[in-house]
Image 1 (tube, rainbow, N blue to C red):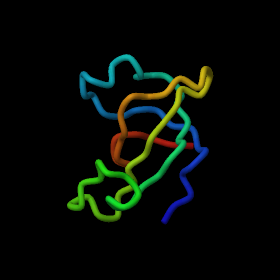
Image 2: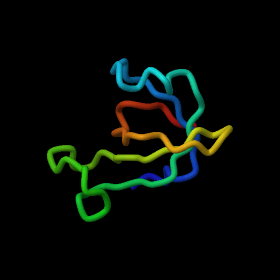
Image 3: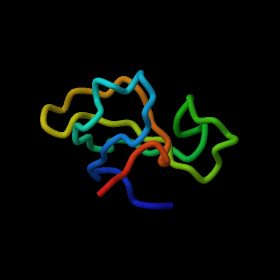
Image 4: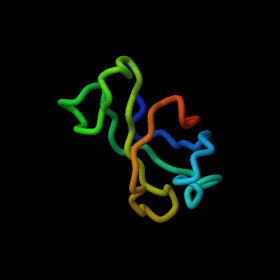
Length: 74
């Protein structure tokens, strides 16, 4: 498993629900790889990290989780 917690990220997905947070630097605050770690984890995504975020500059909670393929991190 990758060490993602604490890394900065930007959203890649074009889902309209993410518009407010597009082109903003986010910070990963929680990483899950199964339903025991996150109740919203889809078991068909096995191996993919499901991450929770805050806005890096303000610490504002991001009201959704993203799978690893939906964002880029650094």
